[in-house]
Length: 336
Image (cartoon, rainbow, N blue to C red; front, side, top):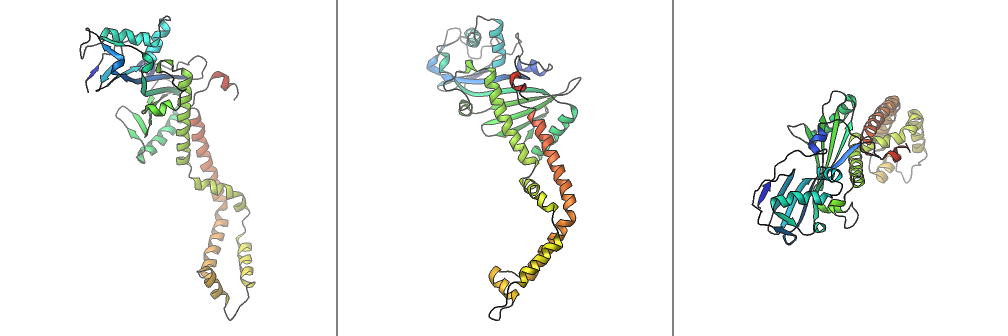
């Protein structure tokens, strides 16, 4: 594959890197800072003309571009947020106008932008956490890594890969509360297409699209975490806890002995033989095991109740923390 990487000069407006070096900048109409990051799009080569000015490997005077080719397609990778910011500054221009300006300088002409397909995309979110919240979340990420469900890179980011998409979590040190950068990378274009309006072109992506895609995947992440943090068996115990509270072992054991006395001998077969023939095990052995379990359960039911409360507290603590990761419009916030 022929490939060239363009230089990365600064332009007006927040870039992805600049956003990570600043505090929280709330997006108008929303309770959070979030944005569409890097996009990778492609088109067939019959939609592209290479002019006489085109030189393989030529450096652009624009910013944040990677261009590559294979046998029949051209691929563009660029920071959507930067070009969106430029189009807002130059209000008479669209995102594709700004991209065209860079491509023309390289010697590339695009015939029809609507023929581009989205191959990959990233969506970003910044959230301020207090130090306790960040410590809780880091412990969770450590456990993911221990389970080989997350990787950790030298720059301090945790990545959790899930086939068609990937979560990347990076903490940013500040003078006050730390900031968590959440990056959702959509790795397969078809996965993204399923979440967008039919035939939506990449240049028509909106912040509301970004919000919905982020929230959908953050809810998936929260669900995975919930099942990891609290084993389903504890929910079964929690549902039984009301009945265990009233458990009286001696009464149940006496009732078991009553059941035994109600079965008459038949054709010379004693009760033990009857039980073994019908249930395949010894009644006395089974009774001893069950009696011991009933007595033990009665003796620890208060401890079990305390442990159930602890498990519930841990689950709700993480649930409330992960709930904060979602993005809300200010109108939706009024409903809380």
